[in-house]
Image (tube, rainbow, N blue to C red; front, side, top):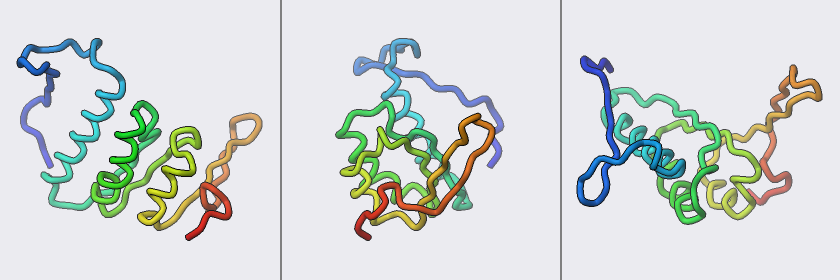
Length: 128
């Protein structure tokens, strides 16, 4: 896909007045980015993988649960999520689990120079 012009966006309130980006919450910006990804998905000819780091960190529980049940499973054929254990607790993990093909745990060595990747459930012993 090629854009011929520069892509710009604006946030607006219910009355249509422009809102400065600095006054928009981090959670709202994250929801905007996810909506943008969905729009790109609809425009793309190819089904490309999507990678999201800390996908739930700035969102409230209601938005987190809706994204887990309705958004991530339908966003792309392959969605790679890199959540922390604090944003994907056991209850939210169980909502996502039916849609997960593989799970890996990344561990970082004591010096921060080494990362190990092991195929393992986020919550070891979780029910399939």
